Amino acid sequence: MAWFAFLGLGAIAGVLAGLLGVGGGLVLVAALAWMLPLLGVPHEAAMHAALASSLASIVLTAAASARAHAKRGSVMWPTVRWMVPGLLLGGWIGSGFAVRLPGDWLRWLVAGYCFLAAAQLLLGRRTPADGHTRPAPRGPGMSAAGLGIGAVSAVVGIGGGSMTVPLLVWRGVAPVRAVGTSSACGVAIGLASAAGYALQAPVGALPAHAVGYVYLPAAVGVAIASVFAAPYGTHLAHRLSGEALKRVFAGFLVLVGSSLLLGG
Image (cartoon, rainbow, N blue to C red; front, side, top):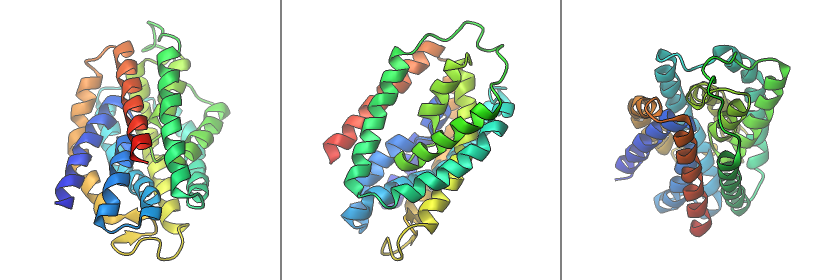
């Protein structure tokens, strides 16, 4: 039954990856934080395991989403190349910080982050009409932004979309292109952060079926299903208007943040 649950979560995560560029990480963290203690994961390690397993699964989820967006020409590869070094370093630093925090602190950080990101999207400026023709943002500033995005993403267990997407929209990029670019960036975040949670965790952090804090059945089950579901989310992203996509994204973040607070 656990495998079916992980596959179902993976399908949801895949659709969200293509639609919102977040790799489904936020919904995965909330669901896994509730599920993993039922499978024998100690309560005090459940939040760490949820974050780590979410990030590990995001590697394939984000790759599938990025591939689907790239086919539609909505991944700005110059921006990705500038951001990747910072994303990798930030993911490693952030995961090292998170493994030293109590689980309840992490829960509150993730919930608070959800509400802040939702507010930013709802109150931010409207996207310019020529967003599809703006040049891809690049330069050292994007590398520095990648460092911060990677670090925060590792702490809250996401692929960085709720920071990368608003940043690119603020730089004048159309939301659908911002989502596609964010998906590609999520691959780097997932790799560095999952490695950090696996290699920097205390010895024997989880009882079985794990590498460090990465609970392998959850990470593998979610990843398998999400790879097949991501293209459907991409299809929806290209059918929604930019402003509608932002509203969907914001509502999604509020729901996930509320579920984490109630679950605590």
